[in-house]
Image (cartoon, rainbow, N blue to C red; front, side):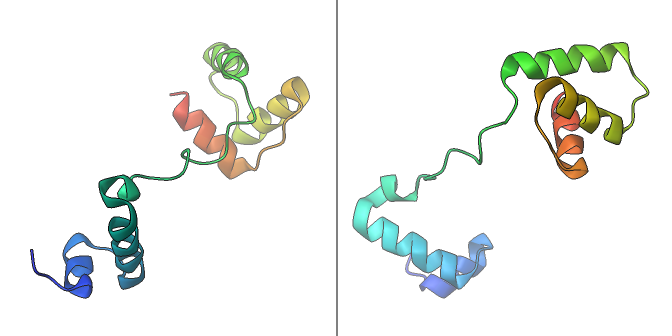
Length: 94
């Protein structure tokens, strides 16, 4: 629309650095260059089956603390998570 990279960055709420990266990708690959190039983060250490097991356990034991869930995950699945990550997992399981 005729905006400079800096003006466009401001309009869409990104830094100038990000805007210049986007410009470079657009110039090189067009629309395809703007598509995300990541898989959305690191894959989960827990399989879907393990997550289902954890969900079932949590339905049966409603008043467990985050630290207890972390200990359960370590004991049952052999996976260690920080308490912050356990809270994220709990939120994702509803």
